[in-house]
Length: 397
Image 1: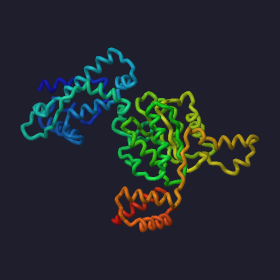
Image 2 (image 1 turned 135 degrees about the vertical axis):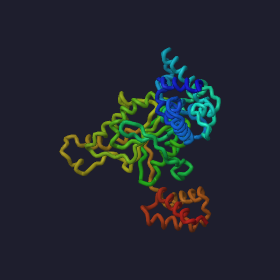
Image 3 (image 1 turned 180 degrees about the vertical axis):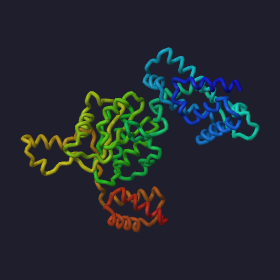
Image 4 (image 1 turned 60 degrees about the vertical axis):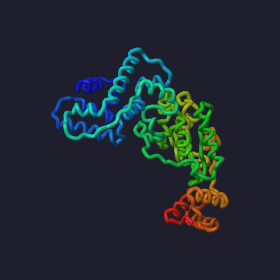
């Protein structure tokens, strides 16, 4: 029991990896290491620990190593940026990493001996890992994996000044988006440039609704996630928070797209000036690992009325130019126009092939046209909805 209890006591002294004490499995382990209480109490603690572990698998070593590699802590943040750490940090880091490796190697039989119960308790597996080597290997690939919440998640929302992972992100891929290949190639090439440290533009995807602007951005993120790309979706009301968010992301080894969907402004919208400053590259907003991608149905992002044109501003030409020039601040504007009949039919055909629909093409295309007439007209979204309706009704041939 002593060989189990001693590392359990040391677990309470974590400093560098102290966040791990909030992890449900490690917190349950910490309670289990407490030798106080009768056998029924210790059985309950073991069951709580095993249940928490089983939610993620049956290997304790795998779980603890993953938690260690994903932990966001001062040492990981410094090493990721190739910054030196103090001798005190180095010693604490080395000791704690060794402790966590030791705990990850405690066999289930030894843990059951700690409980002291002679009945059945579920077992778990362990695997021998060199935590220090694994940590070093992760640092070599830090620009791909990142650390903290960025290891396991690729898309995020920004709420109450916090990044919230999207647990079930849109799985769309570029292969599932036929048509507009040239536009998507522009988005992809620009994003690859961002990842490779080459000059990359902020991007405005402009065009009719249903043409796949937002889907293109998400598909590119899914395509390049394993190269270190992450997406943070912002609401228009959160634009004023972009400068602070850029400061936070600028020291992260990953690359980010700040994504604003369906962007437009009224004339007196305060966030307009903030976005303009960010796009122009103000001192507080320059960072090489972040690009802003926005979609809009409007070529000119600021809503303009006839009153604006007939107003009493002595320099109204300058005023109108100011209102309509925000889109020019994006380095790259990509247009998604509503498809004509030929392009629409081509998209329907490619989607039918993708889903192995063997219906005669003449019938397929005639029905696709009729479907579009009863919707909002031809668009990739309507083509997708038409194919989904066939699949739902079992009409594949």
